[in-house]
Image 1 (cartoon, rainbow, N blue to C red):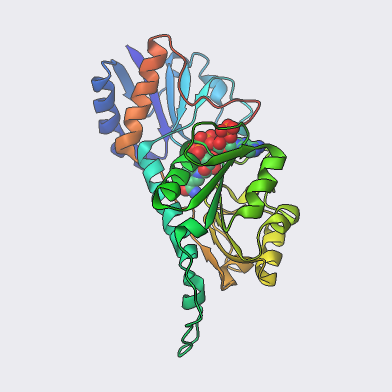
Image 2 (cartoon, rainbow, N blue to C red):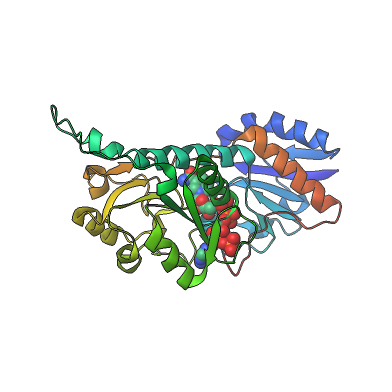
Length: 311
Ligand code: NDP
């Protein structure tokens, strides 16, 4: 019998419990699943979306795997008591939700929606020459589980897509780049830049005065990655000068974004409240059970977070 602890907000337990139990049965796993234990040393797995950041994970010395229910590793990696392998969530349902969000907002910028939604009554803006997707370049920074799916959707629709990641990607149906030179190449061509990178020491403030200055005049930015990717003062300056024509921002250094933050008040910024996508229990529980089954068979778990890279 495998012991697994579901450690997340209380309200999620009745939602996840039956779906997890069914997914374990489908994998042929016999799991004693609980959301409370007074014998943490007996736990083999933690299914984890912590209600608090300062959990003492050292009380679970025998864990084979911590399976996060989150895609973003940043909060989890701050826990100093984390010594066991942790897998981030790669959930087909979450991926589909992110594609919906990113593609929807690519289309919003492609169709220049700000121009019309900011128009004064009676302002009949006929001087609009709409580009076709093949004439627009979409750059996706972060060609991971989510970025790759979003880039693929934009490519399939007909946009010119450029991808950028830490390591070179081969085999994508669009051109991919890596490294600092690659970033410059991608940014100077892009009409719409999507940031789907994790928050790590290496990605903090990636979008700053310098990278913004490389971008095309009138480029748009969509950030469902993390707030820390952006130097907010630099982005606001670029928005105010018109260098950046519009931004769709889902994630922020401080959440909820304070009501007096200039992003709320900027006519060319759309703030969404960290809702780009979320873990969907119906698909995520299959991923959890599959990963646990892999470990039980002696295989390496999928999507392990690298403690050095922090993602
Ligand atoms: P992945 O780990 O699958 O992908 C991360 C990508 O970023 C990889 O392509 C990786 O490169 C690249 N990357 C990481 N560091 C660097 C770097 N220093 N320079 C260049 N590229 C880098 O993550 P996901 O796609 O699953 O998720 C991405 C992020 O999306 C999450 O970390 C989270 O912050 C955010 N998110 C936001 C949500 C929301 O609702 N707003 C919901 C879910 C996730 P390589 O491929 O070479 O490793």
